[in-house]
Length: 83
Image (cartoon, rainbow, N blue to C red; front, side):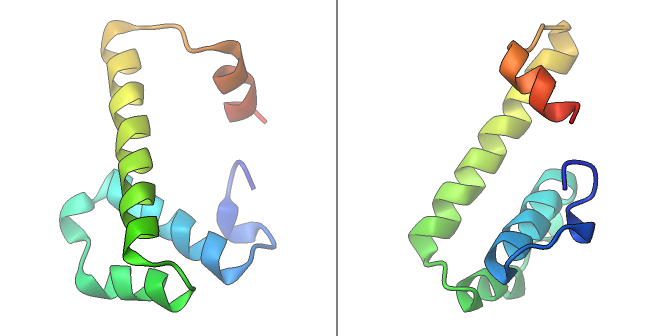
């Protein structure tokens, strides 16, 4: 799953969240109401979606800072991202 979540055996909610996270990370300007409605259809409410989007944004922000300033990531992050 860590290399391609699309090949993993995931429940529909987790898969939808990962697809949403990818879209928010790569093309946030393309997020539309239908994307949010798909998350709602999996059982997430608006607060869940807001919190998930917030967490996605924080991780994107931190990764960009690390990239720009060549910062070392914590060992837990480095080891989990290489699996």
